[in-house]
Length: 585
Image 1 (cartoon, rainbow, N blue to C red):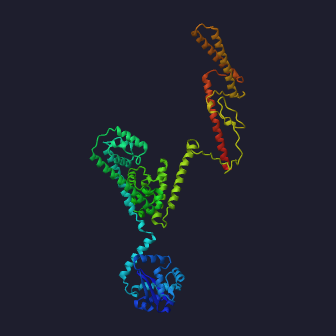
Image 2: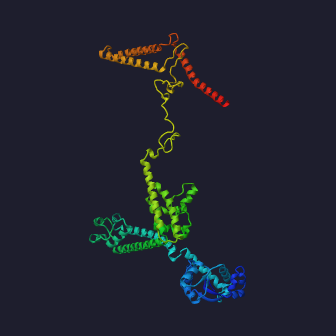
Image 3: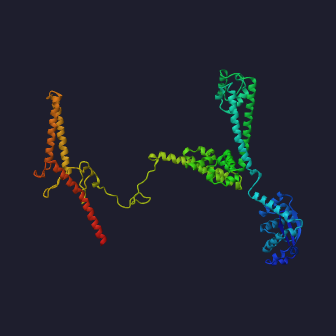
């Protein structure tokens, strides 16, 4: 029987000298206590050495998946003819049996034999020292860990950090050079700065035109539109600029060349950055774009460091200064940092930018972790999350529109709670409440309550003239007496108005001064008649009981007022006594 043993240096094939000792699994470790006893159990038959680290890594990765490599298959075909092979992995044994038709064995005795071989490996394999085996195993372990994390040269994010830094520097330099060209050439043709707004088109036009006198004979169709070209030629003829020498124009043209070359290099660098971002962080790119994603990676230090950050940190990454200032001054903390420049936040209304930035930061943190540690290289996760965020933004905007277009002042209608109403039904459990007319208030007088309920004095007629009746007299209804008094007053007023109009028409009084005392007399007569009618209205009350003095009337009013307040107090006391009696029972 042969034993296949994998080492960092290559594959070793051992011959078992005494197979009978494998039956005693518990005592097998004693046979490998020393190198001499181990040589009596097994003997090295063949050894296949790896040529380089790449071959060792490919063989090790295939063994992890339970597949034999090409070199291992050749090695086994050459040395395993008609013998059984002991392997440490049953899955690998099945693959060897299917492809090479070699009988394989995997058991507890084989695993114990493997442990013994590992303990005496340097003694059993000649030429393999301990100091050589340790760096081999360390290098192979590092290579395997990189392979498991899918670490490759394409995943190096330092290129992205350098590229985005250079891109920002190029933007600053381009703006500086373009403004210098405008300022320099503006002495010769100041109107051109207002006609052409784009810096690159301005530099191309200056390089092609040179002196403004040449603008009339040149064709700017490749650079400018027809309208701008005609405006340029018209302005060049009437320009207020100074004359410039040919040497100055040559230096201005050289500066224009620098601007154009920098713009071309910036475009190339942007294409390179976009391709690297799509390769290294495709989901992050799908969510926030190439530039924002690259700036987040550069600010975090690396893609792996950014993957360790929570969503709340990603949200304010780049706004640390504002955050610590807000914490120091106890003001509101910032809602967004570098992520503010993402297209999703730009689409949102100002009131929703905070909510969308929080949601986008959470999805960005997930996308970065998936890009840094995931297996797949596509951007499906980023596209799905972006679609979800766009739907959330539409929901937020639609909800706001619904509120403003719905009920008044944008507030939802609140239904009054009714304990008698069934859940999910419009009917009532109990019967509908009947209308109680005693709860109504009438300005003219109080309505007589229905049933045995006591009459409650109305709030608006607290200070009415109420005269108590004697024991033998019938009560008088206040409402009826008041109505009759009002009717009589209205009739008398109408008569006075008619009489006054007749007097004016007949000119019985010669002057306006004489009419005024006559009217005053008539008013006094009507008031006296009204007071007589009021006294006559109380027909049931005898004349002896009627007191003309106002002081006595006021005293009677106070008595009536106190009696009206004492009645409800007496009722309350009687109710309390009844409750106490019930409790005592």
